[in-house]
Length: 65
Image 1 (tube, rainbow, N blue to C red):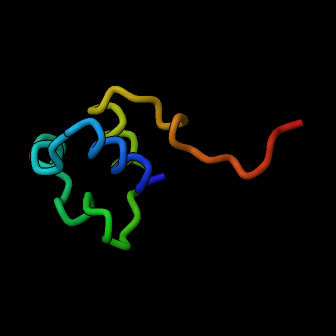
Image 2: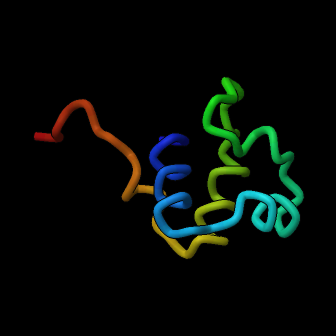
């Protein structure tokens, strides 16, 4: 999910530095190669900043019956 959001930011020319400054999230956490996962609060803050629904980036492995 994290990499899909970072791909979206890259495709939309959204600055990692600007997002980091605005949300007070370490720039390192916003780099593609970084292994650190985002916690739920970071994910929701980033999606709110980008004005996107986090479910758009969630890949469900199973469909509900």
